[in-house]
Amino acid sequence: MIRWHEHGLVPIGPALTGDARCRFVHGDFFAMADGDGFDPTAPDRVFDAVLVDIDHSPRHLLDDGSTGFYGVDGSRRLAGRVRPGGVFALWSNDPPDDEYLAVLRQVFVDVAAEVVSFPNPLQGRVATNTVYLATVRPGDSHHSAGPCARSPHPVRNEFARNP
Image 1 (tube, rainbow, N blue to C red):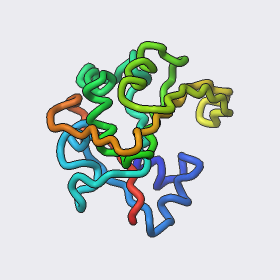
Image 2: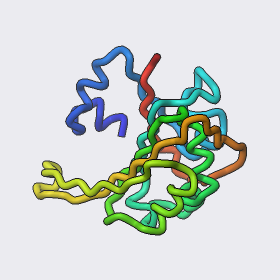
Image 3: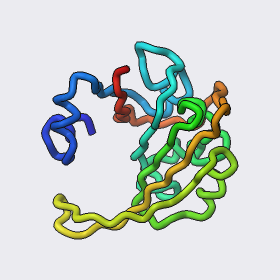
């Protein structure tokens, strides 16, 4: 993912890599979510938004180790990484999943699944995907220690905006 941005394969990649306020952090997403957080220079830092594109969808996983991330406990731990009033967003290749929406509603407010269609230049066709959006309740702090998921694949990427 980082190379995609650096080499302009992602439309906004050149703008992000050229912006001094932006930084890419390479690490295991699940270990970071369960550990000290997504910013190695500021443990337990919370963000205005956490945007995730890891598995194909909450049902079609690239690795069974991420199963716990899509449950209530994993969602609570992730919500602890987002500032109250902030947003969690998840990209999915599948249509909206009512079971996953029910999980999100147990943890977040203003939960929605937005279906988006766009021309995919890499595939030469129009693609249709789902973006799940969920807002952390103002005043909530869900962070708790413990694993939400584990993956043997360390190719996880988080984008952090420097303050």
